Length: 198
Image 1 (cartoon, rainbow, N blue to C red):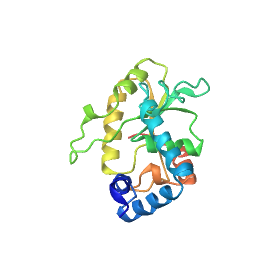
Image 2 (image 1 turned 90 degrees about the vertical axis):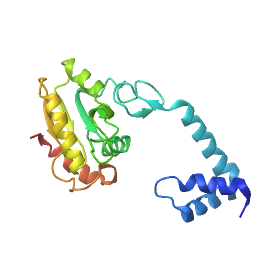
Image 3 (image 1 turned 45 degrees about the horizontal axis):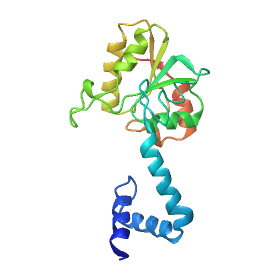
Image 4 (image 1 turned 120 degrees about the vertical axis):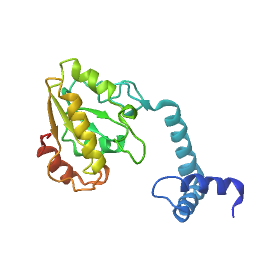
Protein backbone atom coordinates (compact mmCIF):
# COMPACT_ATOMS: atom_id res chain seq x y z
CA UNK A 1 0.00 0.00 0.00
CA UNK A 2 1.58 3.22 -1.16
CA UNK A 3 5.00 1.81 -1.96
CA UNK A 4 8.17 1.31 0.03
CA UNK A 5 8.62 4.94 1.10
CA UNK A 6 5.12 5.12 2.57
CA UNK A 7 5.57 1.82 4.39
CA UNK A 8 8.91 3.00 5.79
CA UNK A 9 7.28 6.22 7.04
CA UNK A 10 4.49 4.21 8.71
CA UNK A 11 7.00 1.80 10.22
CA UNK A 12 9.09 4.64 11.68
CA UNK A 13 6.02 6.47 13.01
CA UNK A 14 4.76 3.29 14.68
CA UNK A 15 7.95 3.15 16.79
CA UNK A 16 6.97 6.37 18.57
CA UNK A 17 5.37 6.02 22.01
CA UNK A 18 1.59 6.03 21.81
CA UNK A 19 1.48 5.28 18.07
CA UNK A 20 0.67 1.75 17.03
CA UNK A 21 0.46 0.59 13.41
CA UNK A 22 -3.09 1.94 12.89
CA UNK A 23 -2.33 5.34 14.45
CA UNK A 24 0.89 5.52 12.44
CA UNK A 25 -1.06 4.91 9.21
CA UNK A 26 -3.51 7.72 10.07
CA UNK A 27 -0.64 10.09 10.91
CA UNK A 28 1.17 9.19 7.68
CA UNK A 29 -1.98 9.90 5.65
CA UNK A 30 -2.41 13.31 7.25
CA UNK A 31 1.24 14.17 6.56
CA UNK A 32 1.19 12.88 2.98
CA UNK A 33 -2.02 14.72 2.05
CA UNK A 34 -0.24 18.05 2.61
CA UNK A 35 3.46 17.38 2.12
CA UNK A 36 4.41 21.04 1.56
CA UNK A 37 2.69 22.34 4.70
CA UNK A 38 3.00 19.35 7.04
CA UNK A 39 5.50 16.69 5.99
CA UNK A 40 8.42 18.85 4.80
CA UNK A 41 8.32 21.31 7.74
CA UNK A 42 8.23 18.33 10.13
CA UNK A 43 11.16 16.69 8.35
CA UNK A 44 13.15 19.94 8.45
CA UNK A 45 12.40 20.46 12.15
CA UNK A 46 13.45 16.89 12.93
CA UNK A 47 16.69 17.28 10.99
CA UNK A 48 17.48 20.57 12.72
CA UNK A 49 16.76 19.04 16.14
CA UNK A 50 18.94 16.03 15.36
CA UNK A 51 21.89 18.36 14.67
CA UNK A 52 21.39 21.00 17.36
CA UNK A 53 19.79 19.40 20.44
CA UNK A 54 22.16 17.98 23.06
CA UNK A 55 22.30 17.24 26.77
CA UNK A 56 23.16 20.07 29.14
CA UNK A 57 26.45 19.24 30.88
CA UNK A 58 25.12 20.77 34.12
CA UNK A 59 21.63 19.35 34.57
CA UNK A 60 21.20 16.77 31.80
CA UNK A 61 18.15 18.22 30.06
CA UNK A 62 17.85 18.50 26.30
CA UNK A 63 18.36 21.91 24.71
CA UNK A 64 19.91 23.49 21.64
CA UNK A 65 22.46 25.26 23.85
CA UNK A 66 24.90 24.01 26.49
CA UNK A 67 24.44 25.04 29.23
CA UNK A 68 20.70 24.89 28.71
CA UNK A 69 18.43 27.93 28.86
CA UNK A 70 17.39 27.10 32.44
CA UNK A 71 20.93 26.69 33.81
CA UNK A 72 22.08 29.81 31.95
CA UNK A 73 19.17 31.94 33.21
CA UNK A 74 20.48 34.37 35.89
CA UNK A 75 16.94 34.94 37.19
CA UNK A 76 16.62 31.27 38.24
CA UNK A 77 17.37 30.35 41.87
CA UNK A 78 20.58 28.31 41.49
CA UNK A 79 20.50 27.44 45.19
CA UNK A 80 17.38 25.31 44.63
CA UNK A 81 17.69 22.12 42.57
CA UNK A 82 14.76 19.88 41.68
CA UNK A 83 15.85 16.30 40.89
CA UNK A 84 13.70 14.47 38.32
CA UNK A 85 13.89 11.14 36.56
CA UNK A 86 13.42 12.23 32.94
CA UNK A 87 13.37 15.29 30.71
CA UNK A 88 9.61 14.71 30.38
CA UNK A 89 9.28 15.20 34.14
CA UNK A 90 11.25 18.45 33.90
CA UNK A 91 8.96 19.68 31.11
CA UNK A 92 5.90 18.82 33.23
CA UNK A 93 7.23 20.84 36.17
CA UNK A 94 8.16 23.75 33.90
CA UNK A 95 4.60 23.80 32.53
CA UNK A 96 3.37 24.45 36.08
CA UNK A 97 5.64 27.54 36.31
CA UNK A 98 5.99 26.93 40.05
CA UNK A 99 9.64 25.92 40.38
CA UNK A 100 11.92 28.98 40.40
CA UNK A 101 15.15 26.99 40.64
CA UNK A 102 17.13 24.67 38.40
CA UNK A 103 16.97 20.93 37.78
CA UNK A 104 18.94 17.71 37.70
CA UNK A 105 17.76 15.02 35.27
CA UNK A 106 18.88 11.59 36.47
CA UNK A 107 18.05 9.78 33.24
CA UNK A 108 16.38 6.94 35.13
CA UNK A 109 15.95 5.43 38.58
CA UNK A 110 17.64 2.59 40.42
CA UNK A 111 16.14 -0.70 39.29
CA UNK A 112 17.47 -4.18 39.94
CA UNK A 113 15.08 -5.62 37.34
CA UNK A 114 16.33 -3.45 34.50
CA UNK A 115 19.93 -3.48 35.75
CA UNK A 116 20.10 0.25 36.45
CA UNK A 117 22.63 1.01 39.17
CA UNK A 118 23.98 4.24 40.66
CA UNK A 119 26.69 4.43 38.00
CA UNK A 120 23.98 4.64 35.32
CA UNK A 121 22.37 7.76 36.79
CA UNK A 122 23.39 11.34 36.01
CA UNK A 123 24.42 12.26 39.57
CA UNK A 124 28.05 13.43 39.25
CA UNK A 125 27.14 17.00 38.33
CA UNK A 126 24.47 17.11 41.08
CA UNK A 127 26.98 16.08 43.74
CA UNK A 128 29.51 18.55 42.32
CA UNK A 129 26.96 21.39 42.42
CA UNK A 130 26.02 20.55 46.02
CA UNK A 131 29.69 20.26 47.05
CA UNK A 132 30.30 23.80 45.78
CA UNK A 133 28.32 25.06 48.79
CA UNK A 134 26.00 27.26 46.72
CA UNK A 135 23.01 24.90 46.89
CA UNK A 136 20.74 25.25 49.94
CA UNK A 137 17.94 22.80 49.00
CA UNK A 138 17.54 19.73 46.81
CA UNK A 139 13.96 18.70 46.03
CA UNK A 140 13.61 15.00 45.18
CA UNK A 141 10.73 14.99 42.68
CA UNK A 142 10.81 11.33 41.73
CA UNK A 143 7.78 9.20 40.93
CA UNK A 144 5.94 7.47 43.77
CA UNK A 145 7.12 4.01 42.75
CA UNK A 146 9.33 1.49 44.53
CA UNK A 147 12.20 2.44 42.22
CA UNK A 148 11.60 6.17 42.73
CA UNK A 149 11.54 5.73 46.52
CA UNK A 150 14.74 3.66 46.55
CA UNK A 151 16.47 6.20 44.31
CA UNK A 152 15.34 9.05 46.60
CA UNK A 153 16.63 7.17 49.65
CA UNK A 154 19.99 6.52 47.95
CA UNK A 155 20.30 10.18 46.93
CA UNK A 156 19.40 11.33 50.43
CA UNK A 157 22.24 9.22 51.85
CA UNK A 158 24.68 10.66 49.29
CA UNK A 159 23.58 14.23 50.04
CA UNK A 160 23.68 13.80 53.84
CA UNK A 161 27.42 14.49 53.81
CA UNK A 162 26.71 18.05 52.69
CA UNK A 163 25.00 20.96 54.42
CA UNK A 164 21.96 21.03 52.20
CA UNK A 165 18.26 20.59 52.95
CA UNK A 166 16.81 17.56 51.17
CA UNK A 167 13.04 17.57 50.61
CA UNK A 168 10.64 15.35 48.70
CA UNK A 169 7.53 16.27 46.78
CA UNK A 170 4.49 15.74 48.96
CA UNK A 171 0.77 15.24 48.49
CA UNK A 172 -0.68 15.01 45.06
CA UNK A 173 1.58 12.42 43.45
CA UNK A 174 -0.34 9.13 43.46
CA UNK A 175 1.37 5.85 44.29
CA UNK A 176 2.61 4.38 41.02
CA UNK A 177 2.17 7.75 39.27
CA UNK A 178 4.63 9.38 36.86
CA UNK A 179 5.20 13.13 36.93
CA UNK A 180 4.94 13.69 33.19
CA UNK A 181 1.27 12.59 33.07
CA UNK A 182 -0.01 14.67 36.01
CA UNK A 183 -2.04 17.83 35.55
CA UNK A 184 -0.68 21.23 36.62
CA UNK A 185 -2.88 21.41 39.76
CA UNK A 186 -1.60 18.07 41.04
CA UNK A 187 1.98 19.12 40.34
CA UNK A 188 1.40 22.41 42.14
CA UNK A 189 0.06 20.58 45.21
CA UNK A 190 3.00 18.18 45.16
CA UNK A 191 5.59 20.96 44.97
CA UNK A 192 4.00 23.18 47.61
CA UNK A 193 3.52 20.28 50.05
CA UNK A 194 7.10 19.01 49.87
CA UNK A 195 8.55 17.77 53.14
CA UNK A 196 11.92 16.68 54.53
CA UNK A 197 13.08 13.35 53.09
CA UNK A 198 13.18 10.48 55.53
